[in-house]
Image 1 (cartoon, rainbow, N blue to C red):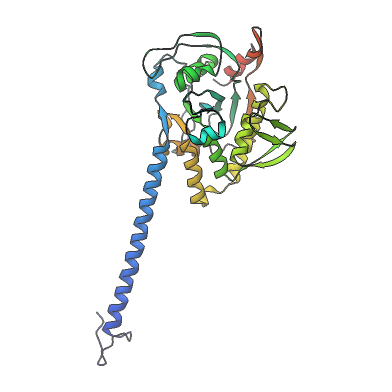
Image 2 (image 1 turned 90 degrees about the horizontal axis):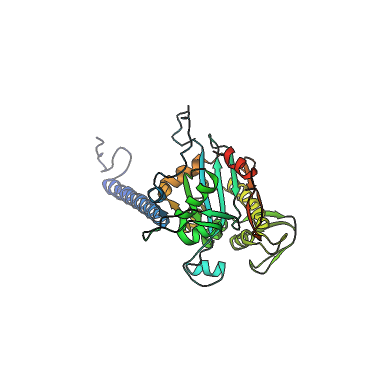
Length: 353
């Protein structure tokens, strides 16, 4: 212990008052730092709770039971990675729901709670999760829609020669999944649905997206006008591009699918060049945008589960993702509709099982 000298100072030349004052200053600094850390932890906790609370989910497994295609057989990874590495099939839907002021403004129309699956993609991720195939299903495809359980009880009737996107309209996510599984023979491991507002906000959170169009676009319905060439789009413009149908090609859903597939690859490129991990505020904005407009199955209804899935897919790039459209032909009963073209469609689904 250091004592005081004859002049009342310690060996370092400080008197007792200076020592006490310095002690109080250090204590104050310590309390401020502690308070700051506690506030930071509280904010982080609130952010986690908020993002987790954003996510809406549907218990598809319980609703459909065991009468489904078998799960894909997977070989355990030889590595010690805590992340899953097996193959995966996910049904991704873009909903045209007008529920909520933002969706009404972006999509037009009234606030009616009905919705259709405006975009449908089966995303099949290969074992190892470094490559994937994205298969678009035209919403105008005529299919046999199976009988589906309803949330209120009871079931829908089986329907023949009905449009694919009617499955979501009459039975929600559960019927959409069951119809896709019936069409493809592939079990959907997960379900993801994003609405108009969520998609637009995600693109904005990423700083926009750069796309190249091969032809001029002028679509009164989607309110998008673009000259052929390369453009950097904000969220509202990207959503309009994803919805454009009448301003390109023959005005069919197939032209829109081509735009959507290009947009998917452009978003992958944008994500790979955006340093969200070094920008906490940007990362939070992106996460808030995604979760606010997201509906999942119960296997992905928490932030931890979504983060684990995202981390397991971080090896995917636009170069390793193949985009295709389910082979279709004009429907004999209605030239404005299409049907799966066989055997090509069956062979495509078989290759992904």
